[in-house]
Image (tube, rainbow, N blue to C red; front, side, top):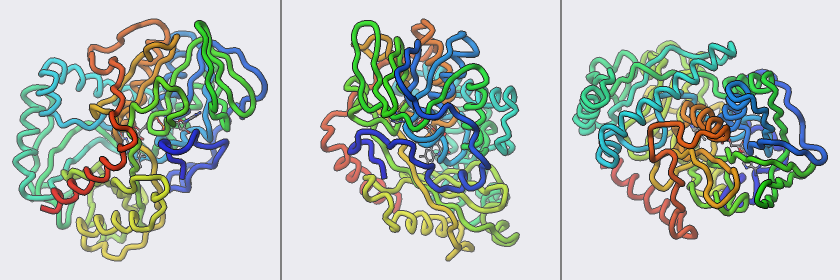
Length: 445
Ligand SMILES: Cc1cc2nc3c(=O)[nH]c(=O)nc-3n(C[C@H](O)[C@H](O)[C@H](O)COP(=O)(O)OP(=O)(O)OC[C@H]3O[C@@H](n4cnc5c(N)ncnc54)[C@H](O)[C@@H]3O)c2cc1C
């Protein structure tokens, strides 16, 4: 499997990883094929996930700039075509209490409003583009997997109400059984906003809207080399060289160290994996997930899960550390074990789909949307830490504003700061292994 810390680029026209989403999405929409020959463009966007596609769409629609998107493999080949499908008020992985203590209540509130705006941006695109992506009714539960997590969830609900004036609420263990049955159901924090959908259909919908607005999307066109002078960038792809005045790097967890020295080492690619079971019987459904809302738990190495419209369960969590180990059946088994610990009625249930992808964690575990220093007109966004479905779409919209000349399109200062480089890069994975061991120990207490 492609490993951003090892390989130079993700491939040339590789097929989508076989997943439940690919199996149920229907036919891919038309694209513009690989780059062939020399091209001279105003704006080139590297990466055709939600960030790149949303940036291209907003550039065309709001700013009259028709960008060219360069994608190594297929449209939404990265995280955007293979995620857990939750569009939530989320971005990065910093607990609300920690966010307030780091940046203060005013900034925390401004960031929450930006994340909420992101969810509304996704809703707006689905509505405007009439994107048929099987969007489900709203509702998100953060479920206490241990009794001792209940007090923390109550405090978190209080912070949402008092500091953010947001209507989150704590639901008791008895109440949560109506939607989340089984062994690890001690209560939950309920967020009324946030829904699940079909992520690949969503990405293809945004892609279609972007092309209708005049964007070109070239697949099988990895940027394998990059030369810059004061006024332009030469992006080398296998089919030809694209000369661009402005470049957007939208490669997130799939960013290799060799793409551009200035953007290298600013995210840690972390592998997240998903299994999808066979469809449940009515009784299995009653004793596991009677509800179809978005669910995740309170572990440090958390699990996220939902019941799909055809009554299968999608269950995901952290897995391998390296690309080389990603196919190891042990990781699939770990997810299966975690699923059955939560819902003992599913013991031995068959798994029909299994896949994974690289999420991007920044040094401060928060996203970034910034102009790259020391480079002429290069912009980038990413670092969503596995919670980027809605925020990457929002970041794409904000990037478009920045490419069009606005310096700081949000009121959240930290979003526009260059993300720090990870120190001790050769030891990144050693550190990650140690952190996982510690988290597993804590989660087992
Ligand atoms: C298993 C999994 C589950 C997840 N679940 C959720 C969830 O439920 N909710 C949520 O909010 N978030 C979730 N996420 C995270 C979310 O999917 C991402 O934050 C979001 O899709 C990021 O979009 P992106 O466009 O920035 O990056 P990506 O979609 O990863 O796109 C990056 C693209 O860049 C391309 N690329 C890389 N290098 C080059 C190059 N040199 N030249 C050309 N192209 C290149 C790649 O091929 C790739 O297609 C999950 C992620 C994974 C992997």
